[in-house]
Image (cartoon, rainbow, N blue to C red; front, top):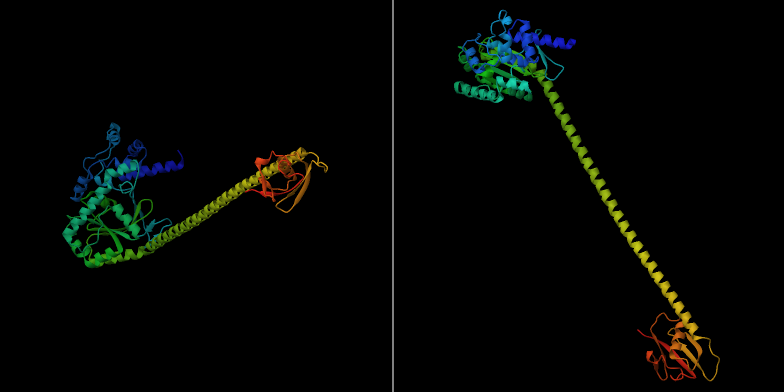
Length: 474
């Protein structure tokens, strides 16, 4: 076992002995070992009895022992024969419920702010308590279960509400504004409000209680001062949580008041105890002094909290600005991407159209070339079909052809040649851009159309010479 572990074991053993009142270290060691060295679980094994009845007994003056109630592992250890001879008397209920050992610091009057959070050192009997074993801590697992066995949060709140109602019924509306919630909730409320917690433990059977409540606690000056500067919590020592707080705060005289402050690690700092009857003036002096001494710590805590809130708000604003800038950047990037996609689509569409137009032009050029080639072949074929131009003679016809452009072409043909031969001659010249036309004579006007293509020049009356013009048909 390492040195830190040995120190931890020794501390737990010392704490357990102090809490339970068992003097035999071997018995304490066995009980702690049986509970896995869980100090809170081992201590809670001594608190299995009904705390309500015990509280009532203590409030009635029965602070002594009684039959102890233990869980099975603890009972088995204590019932062993070798432990019976040296066994100490059964621990009293006050020992069962008392919290972890108290650290008492002596020194000059005044508060010193600790290095961590609200951890406080104070002189003149400031006590630092561990609240875990009492059942006030927010535990988990076995810790939460053992704490729940002492008092549940709902039961503590119910007790607080009942106390406030009974106190108001007995002493009227001019009183400290006790909160209707459990002690730990009230402590957290005071911490959140940066105030001290004023605690009043009510002993209904004590002879000084009625006069103290009427003339001191419920005086207008004290009630107004407490309500303005403190968060107030009260509890009857007849109730479970009030009884436990009386043990935790070591209340020895009544009426009992205390001023506490939340510290670190679920601990509280006891700033002031007020025991026994006090006048309203004496109570105001005490509370005013405590308030003045604790003011630097409260102001520092408030400033730290405000700084944290400001830093948090600044971070939130920075985060919001960052998110807004990020969203704006994302929107611009999205817009840029959409614009780029649009331009790419338009470019692709333009490229597609350009290719289509280029293909159409190429196709048209190719078709035109093909037509031109076909026409050239046709002209060549028709020119070859004409044969050589005959010399002048009696059987030779002179033909003049006039085109719409004013151009004239003249050639000799055999008089036996057909009208179709004249059309072949015109086609072979390539002077026309159209395929549909007629050859016409003026005097007399005769159209040599399809019905006359087979006639010879002589039969058509065009021999020995003729003048024709090209008539374009629509």
